[in-house]
Amino acid sequence: MRKTLFACFLVLVSAVCWSQDQYPQFTEIVTDNAEIFSHAQLEDLRAKLTQFETETTNQVVVLTIHELGSETIEQYANGAFNQNKLGQEGKDNGILILFSKLDREVRIEVGYGLEPYITDAVASRIIRNTMIPKFKEEDYYGGIDLATDLIIEFLKNPEALEEFNRQIEAEGEFPWWALILMTLFLSVFIAAGGFVFYKGYSNLVEMFRGIFIGKLGLLPGLFMLIPTLMMVVFGLVFVLMPLFFLAMVFGFDFDPDNVSLNTALFYVVPIGFFAVTITFAVIKILIKGKEDFKLSWVKSDSTYMSKIFSSGGSHSFGSSSGGSSSSSFSGGGGSSGGGGASGSW
Image (cartoon, rainbow, N blue to C red; front, side, top):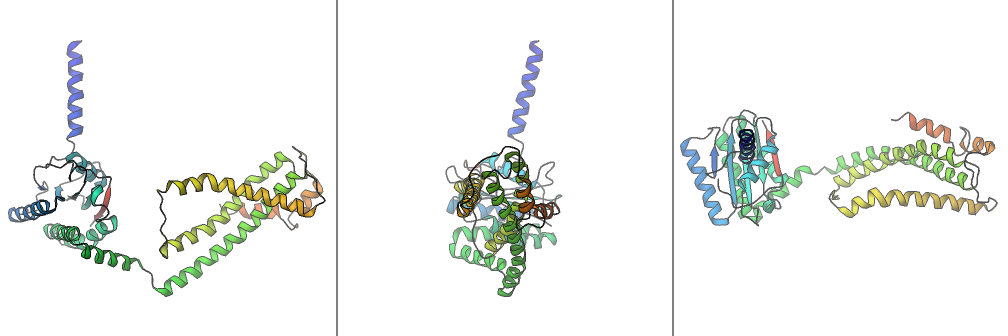
């Protein structure tokens, strides 16, 4: 029994040790496990990055490997970065350039402290415009050497980084004529969505009015509510998605991590939507003045249903719902949260 427990203990310890050293343990600022550098290239790269760390405390580390195995390059880079604790503790000012030879992939993994400078867009453009062209020519050292030069320059020279960011912004800009054509094209979807939304919303208001005056039974009304809401949502999608796209093109910045915005979207907006709809239904009742508030659980007025929700009525529930159904080394203790960019060639 003791031997069995001891064996299990050894297996557990070995598993823990393996998980802790799953990635290469860095002893140099450049680790060339894929053997893509000559001795002179390796020494030059190490000297440059060591000098940069001495001057700034920022760590730019290079790791080359033969293959990733079962992991993605993002998972491997983040794991190797955090296991070796690149960058200084409290500053998180480390950067890892991971190169996988057989997978033909590369990644720039950026620590928290340097993410405001080497953003995902900056890292992506360095990979796309500087590294990949060299890698396609099998000039692996040239691509990595130029990438480290750019990273060092951007971290030491804010003006160079600002100019680089302006170039990135210019790449993403649309010419004025393209913006006009895009706006006109998307306006067609906005208009169609607006019409569908208006028809569905009119039916929704009328349904609540019918329920409040006892002409439409509450239970039948709840069943009729589902296809009507689907029509309203369908119309909203056709309106909001083109508007969202146009807003992004024209530079409006949405923050998906904004907690208050997410709360408003998922809780406040639906409650407000139904509150406004019910208010409109009550206003319609009050304007007519001849209708009394009462409630019918099941029974509906057949004359009212035929007049209001028939295909020929002014608020055609039948036709609306039909239309809706047809559209269906030795780190300093830093860490990385996954910021950076990847590329392949």
